[in-house]
Image 1 (tube, helix red, strand yellow):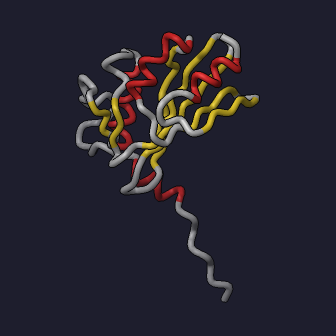
Image 2 (cartoon, rainbow, N blue to C red; image 1 turned 30 degrees about the horizontal axis):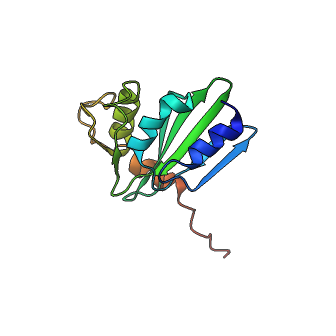
Length: 149
């Protein structure tokens, strides 16, 4: 599949607002991504899952989810955002997504709806689900202005 064909097919996915082809690869911004439609389209798009990244957007807020795919010689990132800190799981239809979703659940308390087993993957006993949300979000807050006195 040529890049223009891939770009057009990505742009047609429900919830995709913008697709860009750059030096680092292809990025689709999909704030309202239909995860099931993405899973349905993967074989036709010739994409295979590399991994999934979660980035907390606030201590009590949503989480950016970025699906990283490989398409022959290109990297394709599909970026979306959770709603009520939940998103449909790719794991029931794309088994390699299971561990990445479990890791994001452990670290950032994202609920992957329909995931077959969100048991802790890497969270040490005694630590709460979402243990990384507060520290990461605190690090993103700007420092208060200093008093010049």
